[in-house]
Amino acid sequence: MRKKFYITTPIYYVNARPHIGHSYTNIAADAAARFFRLKGVDTFFLTGTDEHGQKVEKAAREAGREVQEFVDELAGKFKDLWMTLNVCPDDFIRTTESRHIRAVEHVLNYLYEKGDIYKDSYTGWYCVPCETFWTDGQVLMENGKRLCPDCRREVDELTEENYFFRLSKYQDWLIRYIKEHPDFVKPEGRYNEVLSFLEKERLNDLCISRPKSRFSWGIEIPFSPDHITYVWFDALINYISALGYPEDTEEFTKFWPADIHLIGKDILRQHAIYWPIMLHALDLEIPYQIFAHGWWLVDNKGSAEKMSKSRGNIVDPYVMVEDFGVDVYRYFLLREIPLGVDGVFSYEAVVKRYNGDLANDFGNLVYRVLSMAEKYLKDGVVQFTERPKNRLVESLFDLKEKVDLEFSSLNFYEGLACIWDVINLANKFIEEEQPWTMRKEGRFDDLKRFMYILLETLRIVSACVYPIMPTTAGKVWEQLGMGADISQANWEKIFVWGVIPEGTKIKKYPPLFPRRDEE
Ligand code: MSP
Image (cartoon, rainbow, N blue to C red; front, side):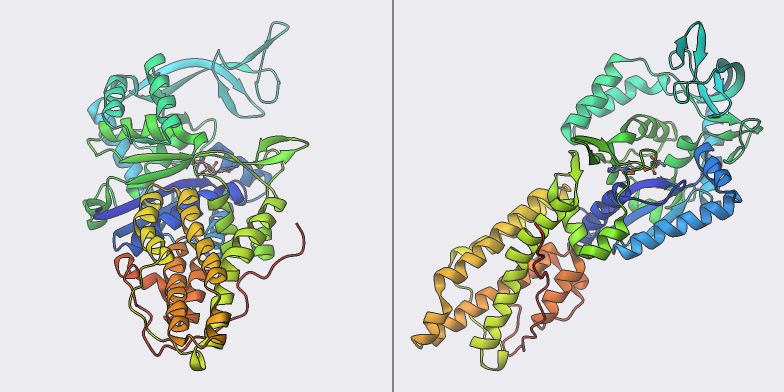
């Protein structure tokens, strides 16, 4: 068993408000962190904001704001969203914080002294309106003129002096490392993508500075006051600066290397190529795994496109939460598609999951069992029964291994499917056993046994959905008289028969997921 679990999300650019794509990564990371905490593993979950760079500076300027004030406000919006979504990180790192700046300066000095960072000059093409530097291969040629590939305006030739990090020196090491660690990148398709890229192309050294004459919103290079640090080089370091690096803090010693860097597939190369090479050059350990999830797309007249600010097709998480509630939103994102693939987000799909899985299956089971408990148990008071041999109870206990296997590898899609098999079996069990007949025929021992099986089923099943739907799980436990603080539960103890004590009084709440009419 793992002794500790350190999971991170990307740190998000603060050039715009968060959307459902960002919330997807953080909800998945939160579910994983909750699961490991439930298992009693010492867990650290990190998220944060990426606040430097030209994009952010430009967004602030366009908003007519001071950059620092602008990033403060946006970082607050990310924090607020995580609170609303019940996403509970152990730390929130901002790249404008002094603890982070100190770590970046240390890394730069260390690599410069080691000779892995060097100065060079190069010539490229600069688009003044976009403030972007393009290489020969990137610019467009039209009527003998070189154009910016973004805005199609003419670009100027520019020679710059910059600092470079020797990526190329470590390419063969990285190929070997990846081959020796088949779980380093997940899912498997992404692993193959990284490896074949590395085997096909020679890496160029990475330009890690920008001249201050172009823009200045960044961390100054300690050995060159005319330059600031390239935003990606700065940002990746957050995963260690948050733990206190370069100090040998207790957190750094305990949690580094990270267990999982959870990211979107758009930023795989930076995480699976730049980052391990940076760490190796720094003589630090390499994270166990980079997990790249897919994108949420939106339908645009029959074809699916990525949700992004520039396309103006953003779905606002607050609108979804207002309409469906936090747990439904969390459930939908993690149940609709496996974490590695793309999915199309639509209101109709959420309603379908809601009415099917939540109202008809889970919500219905909870409400039915508690209604029967009120009706069939004297004063709604639980009567204990020894663990019986029966298919529902066996499948309930099989969940322990199945859910552990799936949730530990971030496969929420499959893990939830296994839980729903048991929920459906329990609904079927009620039909088959016909408690109303037991009562009519005066088979009170059977009725007592039947009720206890179902109450224990609710207890175990809701504990299993806790990482994904924490509030809902807590509400079920409350109704079972188990106390609301399900977060303090322990995975091993959940899978013990007979935890609901004899004499517990059941409290029935209104249905958790009342059916919605639209479909
Ligand atoms: N700041 C960098 C990351 C630095 S990490 C050291 C960055 N930020 S970002 O704001 O653009 O966020 C990118 C991340 O947001 C993606 O990797 C992904 O986790 C999430 N998503 C953004 N749009 C998304 C979708 N449409 N669908 C799913 N997730 C996506 O890149």
